[in-house]
Image 1 (cartoon, rainbow, N blue to C red):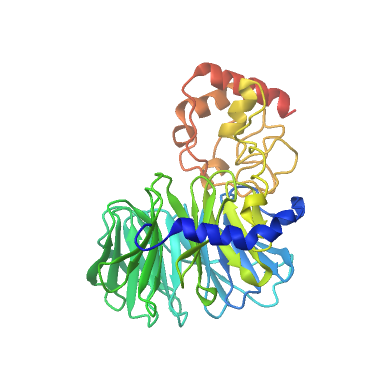
Image 2 (image 1 turned 90 degrees about the horizontal axis):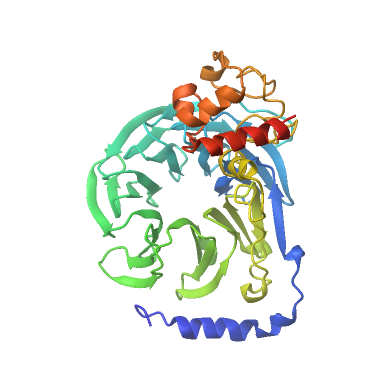
Length: 449
């Protein structure tokens, strides 16, 4: 028993309840892959009316989905780097997004959302570091942003300007939320604290939690008087909001908790960690509802949909994974799928291995780019940098005089993109060993013909 929570008893009750279901024949139909992105998916949001979903990706895009049925509706292009977080306004008319380019973009939505219609984003502003979380005020007039620059951005949506950058956390800010009456702000960060601020003037009120390890995600229920959070050392905790009292503590495996989703109306909270483990708790009894491996690798975000008994998970895959978690007990669900392209388990050449690990998240070898963050490498040798049609290049590459060859590709990975193409959107990827660079180039010369 840990802090009043009897895990053995709760798990035993769940298993007894699920025993009649063990005869169900589970197969691939229990899991659905939702494909629209060309890179890992980092953030998810669902509209207040539960009719639409948005997904943010490493491929620099945001995809809008219809939920009845689930289908891709529109791709939003505007960020210059990976998009980390998205959020619908309370009215559903505005979607906010933030990314590694430090920008906060606003997208004005018109319903019903139709395919093949483009939307130009409004640049609300920028931080000095990547933007990792967003929250609208309950009236939709203001927006909070959390950034790795150590500040909380407070923005006026109507006037479209920054009101204040609130500083006080020691290190990156990971998560932000408005109080129910919009008068206060909650925030968490690398310093292991959950802090309370005055929303009107940005003044610090008091620390609510001092955890010691970074607090990556949290949720607050003022009516039920609790704060639930996940930390970078793998601990999930629930504490009283107005007093120093612990209700629940789970975990000690040092695997960071990366994501959290609170379905308040159904009294469910889900936590996802860096190794693909999903834990779902009932917030009335703080009992365990589900504990299973949803994907290979990190769970960067998830959404619970109890109306159709499903959970949608975002991670390192180019697709979203939908689990029917309430119809099919986790004890008999298959393990997550095979290893990804960038972590091959089959015996391949060193050159192909280097491509898989260093290049394949952003680039394909086919004639079409398949929505990847970077352009296709098809026929790359002899091509002038920044000239492939249909790809939105950075100014650095548009002005570059580089011709891609054995020499320039070797230089790129030896010195790094920040030296060879300063100002480029390409992540810093370097290879110390000459043999690795040589093998990669040999593989690319054959594979990109």
